[in-house]
Length: 483
Image (cartoon, rainbow, N blue to C red; front, side):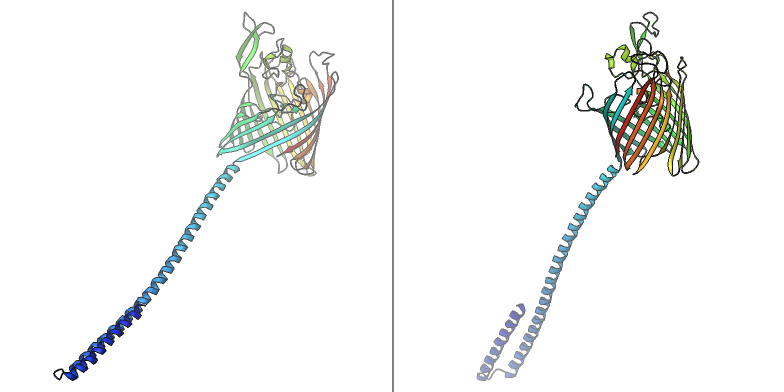
């Protein structure tokens, strides 16, 4: 458009000049004083200048057009660049969002990886037969669930909930139990402890924890549901290991004293409260591996029950409302005085051994456990158990078969620790235990346990309510799941 305008302007100018030249020629013709040659030369020069100007203007127009085209291209490139920049920013924002979400997921994954959960469920059908009591048939449930959280390197916390009331030896709940039929079942803190591993091989534990010493095989000297409260230290270095522990049984102990001498007596009306009871000990052992399948573990332990003698048992199901006979019964077979206080202390030396190997491709375990109470003064101071277990019901279609024999003299072991099923959960008993287990699938087992025991094998016995060497048979059929 600019080029056309300029060309038109030049053409008009040339036309004007041409007209002027014609007019000049006419005038010259009528005016002899004017020089025609000079006028023609001047016109030619002006015409040449105008043509040069027109060419120059045309060149400028072409340059302008090129600049406009280049400017339009630059604008288009700029728009493309802006669009590309927006795309880059959107992509960057999307990547930042994705990264943030990934970081959240990673953080959640890290948190989840620090938590390990586990639990089990068991349904039990149980039949009990005694000489002088009616046969007992009942179904029982046990449910446990817990987790372990890693707090930092070498530091963890464990918490486990379990069914059952406050009985330290049993989380079982009897279906339709007398006085609580169809009632909601209770849940309690079964374990709650922290572990610290400051160096390799050394572990310190504080809180309500699993039994902190080595127990061989299927030994029943200590009930598997006992979770003592206190502090323990475990050390392991190569073949050698050691355990030390201090357990609180009772904050305050109750006992009876003579009103004048204030010394513990078997009779008297003056009740006193003293320091609580505790159970402490140390164990040293060695685990020697003969090969990949065969090993022998031997351990020696000494334990002392401080504050037990002349005090009531530390756990009484009836609480402060218990009668003297109920307090005595809570000793679970240990000797008591007329007020239900424990007659002897417990200063146990205990030897444990376990041998593991394989026979015809099946795991084979032999175990033995012997204890002697140096605090008993009635000659009833020894306890022992020994047995064998062939196979292991764990993986799919695996099974196990076991047998054990155990004898608990009356004051050989702290009665509130002994297994709650063998001999009805009392000392002064002896007999056999038969076991059979099968795993239809991983983490699913079917078990049968049969106790063939004799009760009241020492001291006085009531021939009517509890005769000497009373027959005690107990069959347990279990359906158990682990997760």
